[in-house]
Image (cartoon, rainbow, N blue to C red; front, side, top):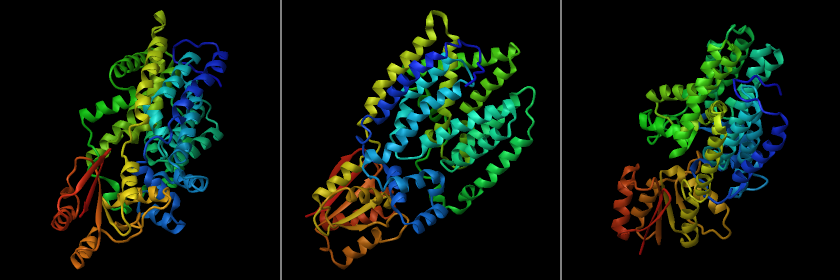
Length: 486
């Protein structure tokens, strides 16, 4: 692949033949290791529910719920789940896409800079805690990120050469990427913004045509914001943009502690390198550098603007900017050539990332495995189970399907977008017969929250305490299990 480097050390091309497989192997080991160690969390449970749903039900959720936000990934999982449904197996596609992204990032980075810097970018991605984390989650982020890399590769080729095939490939990647995750569209906007820094200007006819095709193809998915109910668009826990959340986003890209300081040094050096290209008259290099800057920054700015009206300033929604941030850091490392300082900083970041990755292996985001196994191992036949919020029922459904001889409990929560009894029916059953259930199990998400903060939570607590007294409480990561019984 040809390289159009921003100023930096080119490095011998055969170096990549030796080091890139080693870097990829290290990244693969980090992504495959302990793949099933953690419990599934709620979003992963939704993936399972959509993978197992009937086609009619899936189509309904696609139109009314969130299935269209990661359509292609969910379609993939509908086939994948027939091969296995363990936690590790469900996460394996994400891990594979995350592994493939490492050499893919190297290939794209070679469009921006030299071999040394491209290898540095691949290494930073291989060891990135954020990249490893989402490579071990049964969601579509790594697949969408891989498509963003492909989109950028063809975008650069199309801008350089104006070839119809490259513009068509860019258009296809844009459409497929959008239906892997709708927020990849923010990267397409960043690509368009970068062209304001291109001299001479790019003939826009083919790009505009491709953009129109992408938009028209995306319309069915975009209309979700008008069709969906408000609770499916925004949850109360979603943050608004703030200095604190912006700092968290920087930690997401650069790492915590000393790592973020080192990343800031590399980012600053990378931006300085881009500015030098402009002053030196290397306008193609300057445009490529500004493409990285806009790719790293514009999606976050756009998400912040969107979040002013509908708070959703979540780090994972700009996960697709992580490759740009890492490439910019790698270019900065190339600038710090004296005493091989840049190489030492990259090595330090990679080594410092390993403890963070290892620590995350056994730290579940939500321990639905532990909470569900407690119910499934201790509940009596006919016990009642209720959930707050109600939709977390799908987690018990998954773990019950993985458990041989699970007890037949009466679940008072609607199935995933499929109706059923809810906690009001539980209250009615207890009114009709106070001795209807030997035990009532309450699974409550949001560790530290009070039952009264949920709909019908106060009524449920009052009724259960009047019949059973104070509950036994078991705490898991972000989950409380309340057991009422005599």
